[in-house]
Image: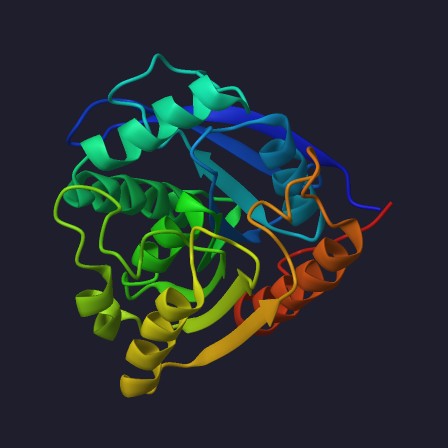
Length: 251
């Protein structure tokens, strides 16, 4: 097994300090870096568990607090209606330029770490899937996994959302995973994203599965553990192939 450690760092961004949670293998050595974006609720227990699983496969995982301009460091929104309402308000109250600057700050931090190989990837869930999609527009991001990325088809992530137009900037490989029973991204929305990526001849793996929104979250009624397990396999296939394994040692 690979034991993991966690810490947090505070990164400077144009819109203020951003707490970023780091999970990495405990064993000394150099590992590829992954920026991992949460749902609208920020760094909840299910997100932490997913990050630990990623790190346990030999990656340095960095999770930024996406609402750092509006909420105190360490804020976690509850999985209830009030938390959902707050998260949905904040996601559209922020400029896309600020999201992009946040991504660049985390990528630069990962690349500068002495324990990072310099190979960088991205992953995200829900709004995080959209943020990972935008992070893939950075040329040093060579592999990206997006789970049911909300709002790409509507252009409604935040102020100035141009994700479909800027998809041409993506140079790395994409893994796009969707739930067919997800009301937030209906069939026509998914097909709009797919048509754009096909138009661009993107390096792409596209998967639609029978799952509701949040079927990857290991908490709540919509969780599908069998489906989640199989799809994480696709994620690790992508990251191991594109990013390498670093100095993985087991104990």
